[in-house]
Image (cartoon, rainbow, N blue to C red; front, top):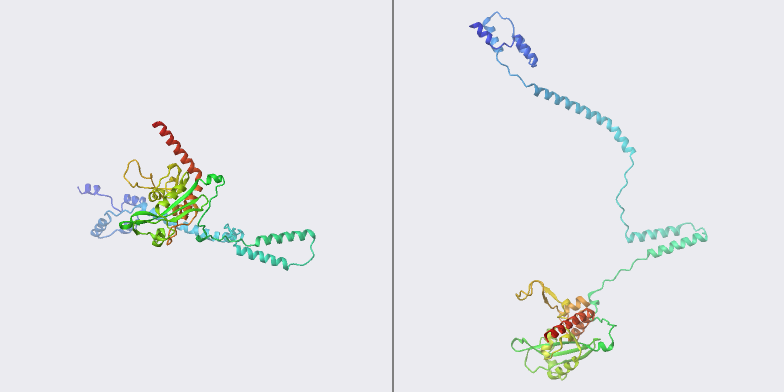
Length: 382
């Protein structure tokens, strides 16, 4: 039994099998060899043998080899870097000495006019201080040409004067050379000023009327008496006062009505917002003989939202008349109806007439097209 137990036990660390295994696994044999010493005391020998036969921790071989490889690589890299730094230093110094400097690719700043003048002056001074030896005819001509060229280039440019707002013309006359005197005599322009009657002065009555011809000359301009009690003279707009209506120069309403009707007979009437003027005058005029700048579509502006909720007028199709002041400034550069000053019916009539003159060609074509359409519709109805 004892022999059988001893055979089945694991080999001791000092046995030849364990020594060979330790050598293959690169395990130190110092402990095993030093601890194997013959002893007289058998009990002590067995204790040593038991401790030596216990399993010993085997370190991992791959971890040690990897660490050694890392250290060797680091040492090689450091040595190579040091050698490369030592060898590259003289090469870099040679390259810096031999390589030419790079040109600055940045463009030079353009000299200002002041600097150009100073250079020209310095060049002229250099020419004057040079030797005064007599020159040949060719040289003298070349130098004279150069001096003249310098003189022409050295002259400063004139600055354009900015036009002030006050320099704008108040009235612009547009010439129409294609019209004869007879055709010009067919055109008149009208404008009227009103005052208010009744509670609040909301009802309008005629207080002044002005008519001008094609050339902007005043044909008729008078104040009109008002029979009713005036509650609002609207002086800040119309410029009319109580003294104007009570003066001897003021005419009655019937006289003004008949005179204006005579002047408009068989004429093409130009104006702005003529509907209101016709209402206070109590007269009418054929539609094909009216040129109203408030109703001409190219002069009108569109609204994003219609005034009335009508399905036939979607957004962007509702046209609204612009003020005569805005049209005159935008289209003609004329300044009328200045703030703080009352309106002048003569100036307003002239402004409307000038607007018509500028757009007369397109306007007349539109009127002719409308007349043809109306003629076709009336013929169908008959």
